[in-house]
Image: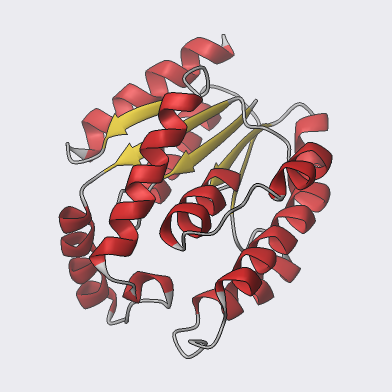
Length: 206
């Protein structure tokens, strides 16, 4: 099974992925946890380019191509082999993030990606969209950055309108992909969200 986690920054998707991984490992499942961008050595180099706040000169069209390059490498090197071995793959962001961030946030027409998707993209069996408001996202990022003594990455420095467009695009995808997308209101407690997610996944894997 291939499960992805989506959401704007600060939604808790990385935390929930780790908690689900722990739950499934305890139940005896073999798990591969990974992320995009950066799930491979090549991907880490691409991630560095994409998130470096100094790289303000990257144009939206180049940005989306870098994400797709990371995705192809990731699918062929990591995701597909793990699925073929019968492992449960958990991925922190995937192809929906490109549609939301570059299609919604950057306002790019991504219709040309359809051929790419058909040829290269392995469709997830299940996607959890952890939905929070942009205001809550920014509060969480501020707390995180203060705790870790770090700055926002290149994308996190975008304005609220950018993230509201992303959130709206995730909403559109969720309405289109009702059989795959599960929306989780992510402003509750970590424990309650974890319980919702684990119950859904364990039931499907039985």
